[in-house]
Image (tube, rainbow, N blue to C red; front, side, top):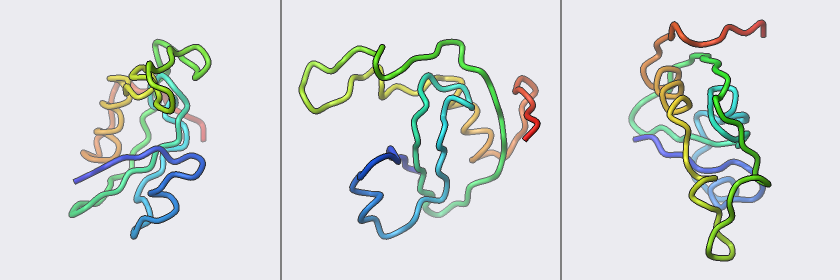
Length: 108
């Protein structure tokens, strides 16, 4: 099982969880997501693989330009949605351990 949670500011899992995250992706936009959002991932009964797929997102969004939520205190669905390119790159990098032919190379 793999689960994710935002990794910014003071979230409950960051302050009180029994296990440190296995992977912390500080900039999801590098792998093709709409936003720069730090996100932590915990792996149970499996181990993450290491990969580096870089892909420029087709659409860039910021928190200020995204629609707000209808309820106070909640973020909008638009801010919670993961880009399909990020999902594909995350699966190849951290679950399957495969390199992709369509990713961008990095000098770093």
